[in-house]
Length: 628
Image (cartoon, rainbow, N blue to C red; front, side, top):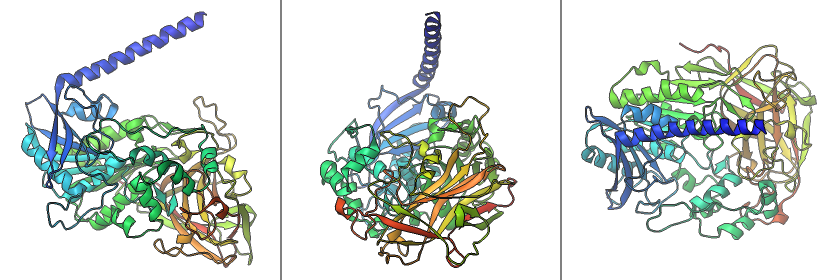
């Protein structure tokens, strides 16, 4: 009884203290800022609803920082303030007296017009009706610098995830007042590697959860989102398995009402539809400074982060282009302290380090002419495994050597190429019993799966496991991984999932309290899926010839990880990853219109002999010391 009373008193004291902090911070915002709402006209007459928070301080002129969002700039009403006492805006931007602008994009919530997912960029605009996200942000900036009092004429655009796409698109506006952008976890290509697909495989969980509410059309003003789908069970694996084919899911819940869902199913290949919606080809001639931010364990837009940076680096030689990637989940720098994810621990102060040393100095330099930008390296990357920030003059860094790591007989993974003449490992992939993407039974897709323990998968007969001996020295990887598999299948199509795993020593444990058994933990470092029919062309799928040996080659997004001495490197290969990705029927049929009867078993062989040497090409960083 006494313990209960003591707990109650301590809990209430904590809540009172927390409430005081929140009240102090919210009081600061209301005392030092005022809010206005405006409908800003675009060149075609459409008006975009915009919330503008303006510092009351008039002793100096202030820069403008914009976020454009499809998720609502709520709360609406000039007396209703967004909770800017979150770590990022309160501690790092609001105290610097930025004018903060949040805008509902075209066709969403209180903005007029028609919404289009990842609206294609129009390079050559001939009339006022040729609008895209670049023209909309140009018109917004033009209005803001002319109409918002006491601004200094310098504008930045930032955003996470979908707003990260709009931030990158802002660079293509080429407005002279736009000095800096920060695409954070940016959507870049919804077929190759972000959100909706990975290498042609339909990401079922994310697509269904997201498009069910986000994709519902609405006409006129709307201040609230559509409700999310209410599952009849708490087990998403069970729900999607019982639904059967995607055709059944579409008929039951989507029909023709969700435009993007319909578009995705009508365009299974990487055709002109997807190419027109890709951001990557247009990232050229950028004048504004760029800071791309992302997470190593971003389940949504890991691909976009790396490839937005790389495209700008390739095409814009004179652009101040920087990248920061930390041990975060999707938007984790904003939503967590970055010290851990699931069972895996990193270091304290990871997110604070980013805001204090990189994001705020970046914007202050380009928007306020304050500070020294030379202190921020081009690439600031957190290396898991050793849990350290490192700074580089480029990414991938100088000193990386592409090194093949071969699959060998007896489940051995080695830097030595196999010498036997005939050797393979095989498994039977059964779509009726797909390999789950995580061990847990749960409803929504987890963010922790990106570094989850893979021991549950290694125990399945339909998952191949290859492992090194215990490492006698550290192995550091810095860059993308290329999987090169020599395969044969007994059917006409199959998917291939490759997972790179860090196996912890049997006696490993964190010094802090951790109830999960970390000894022998199989940490997923990077996993990726590839739809086999696209092995020769992403645009023109081809059936496999049953039992014919063929090469399947694809890239896994960049890693920054050190496999420490005493650990092991493991590779797992499987053909289902459910319900993260949809199931391949394993026949060369239209996956989105096929029936449950079209799903068949396939015998998958992975070859590892002297003539057919399956391997992973690893970006081994020989010089593991950070560049100066």
